[in-house]
Image 1 (tube, rainbow, N blue to C red):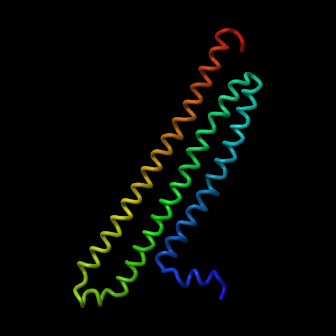
Image 2 (cartoon, rainbow, N blue to C red; image 1 turned 180 degrees about the vertical axis):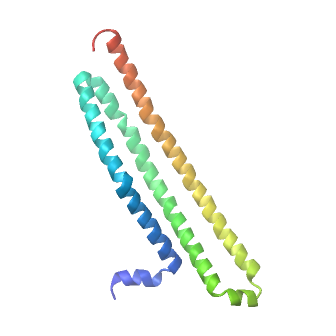
Image 3 (cartoon, one colour; image 1 turned 45 degrees about the vertical axis):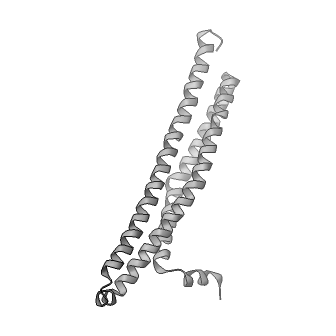
Length: 171
């Protein structure tokens, strides 16, 4: 049997639906904005470094070195965020499967008076998704805060470093 069928045969429907939707969302995000953003910013960065190198090599080096913290922060965020995002996907898949199974067996649940038990399971799973999503949001807030601060700090240092030679007439 082909390996792609084994994966789909062993996975629950809810997990497959959530995974498909999540993958399509990521794919659409990368193609629509991420790729364009990456290309434009890369060309802009290289162009600014080249311009600064013609005016003042120290400023060009300061700008280039300022990229290293952004790279480190981005890699750290990518690893951490990827793990948390995967956990959210798994939890949503489990909850979706749980809902699907409960909907199919609603008569049995009612007949045996299991509504409170099923509700408690649903609430626990929902609470887990909420907590993990909040962790995801905190990670994003921290990342974008740092990502906003570091380039602006480097920009301030370049402006300060450039204003001194200009004020002395050296540039």
